Amino acid sequence: MQYWLIGWGGSACPSNWDSAGGGDCYKNSAYVTAPDMKITTLGSLSLSGAAVAGLNDTVVFNNGTTAYSVSAPDRVLDISAVWKGSNSMSSVTPAVRERISIWVPRSP
Image 1 (cartoon, rainbow, N blue to C red):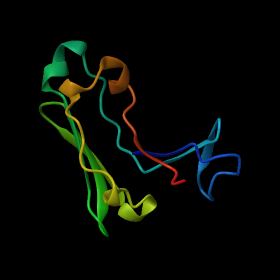
Image 2: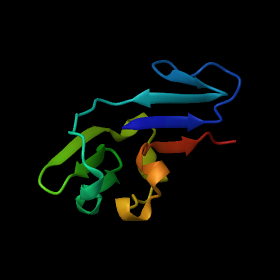
Image 3: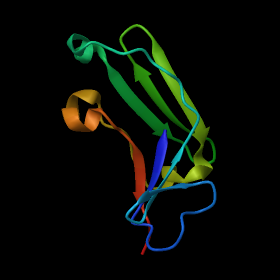
């Protein structure tokens, strides 16, 4: 998973976060590697996620035969307080499919 702080501002990113420039910060969780998939298999691909308060944020990619998942403690952004779910791959535009991230804008 990749967490984003969009519009963090002119101050330095928080400890253990990287700068993406333009006042944005990001942080990567642990990850798993999935094989490259042919475009013809797009209909069998799915991406889902869950954020459970006090437990874990989880993302699962399924290629039709194998599921690949990664979890991280919900305390990274406390995303469960604002995130309500994920979109299926079929409802996401091709450009967005290349990079699906979890992000939360900084509170004013």
